[in-house]
Length: 473
Image 1: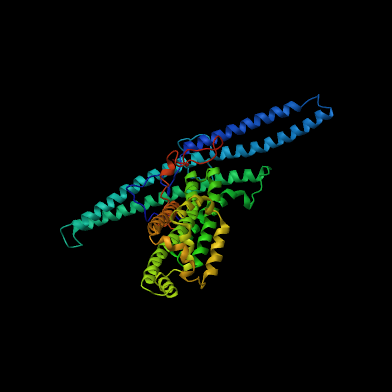
Image 2 (image 1 turned 45 degrees about the horizontal axis):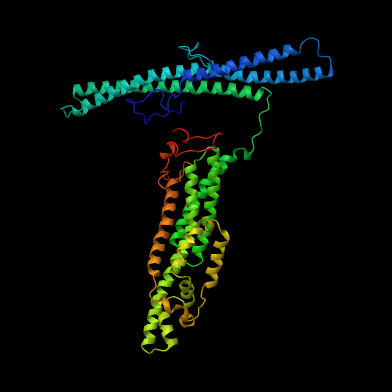
């Protein structure tokens, strides 16, 4: 019994070559089959020429015998290859007759080009009948619904109902024809596939063994995809939880590792042509954002600390002017600023122009794993540590009460936010689902369109496998 279900088919728009019916072009199948059959004939001819070459006298020397032996092995190999190509060509067919030799005879095998053409003709006929019956049924039902009489036993209504039932019966008959045509298609496709499979399995040729590492390029692409997705989540968490001691540093280090893995994998995929250099560029910006984050984040913290320290220094000097003792004034200023004196002294000692030049080290800091783990150790060590009171470093601060660190702090803070949010957002919207279960609503693959435009979607290696845009563009 056929398992084909037509419950969701719109009979007025259905086409014979829709994917649920008989997709494909039988003439293209025949062209492919002819090329394969021509190749089989060429192999057979070359095998015959080689066999004739070593037949007869003149090959009695050691070298001649060795050559004849090697040639015989080659002829055998060509003969086995011929069997495979000949079987595939015969299974596909090399022409498309209007109708098969034995239509509807159970167990009769046709080549696939002939069978596909016949199946499509049968599907066309069934769909025409189904469309007509469906239209008639709908028309009769509309007349029944719009009939002025409320009496279901009215003669006109009864006639319309019989006509609708007849149309529904015609539609059911068309569905049966359609199922039969699809069953024929499936049966003939099975015959063609089995013929090719039997030839491959029985021709004696040794196909190369397949190992789990044969698809290493796909593995690299998959690892790169998931590393990018994980890096995006970790970056988002690190950005939101950067204020939490230790946790922020740990998340940042893990995000950097995932981002570098994604960069390496995407570079391999771009070289192979599976990815694009745009993906690599986005990964590079993402990795550099870690260096920018460390530099600008530290800059912001130091500038903010120095700005608050400058305010505390002014408060200290004002208290001293009012006659408050040095120690007490320092403790009050430190308590009001909320910053330990040692940190203030360290930031102020660099001067307002000694902070931003560290931006030159962004690239170096981006992949400095040692520095990230150093940040973690520092964050752990500083928890609960106390710095000296403000007065111990007072002499070197007296000329800085008019500090310009406040402006530096605002500038560094804005640059820090931009250096993190923009690369993170770009990386997230560039993610594309690699499996059907992944949510397309989250992995938007927003740049897929521009990757089909040269040279944005460029990939591969120049003069080897270079493409100016992704396949299908």
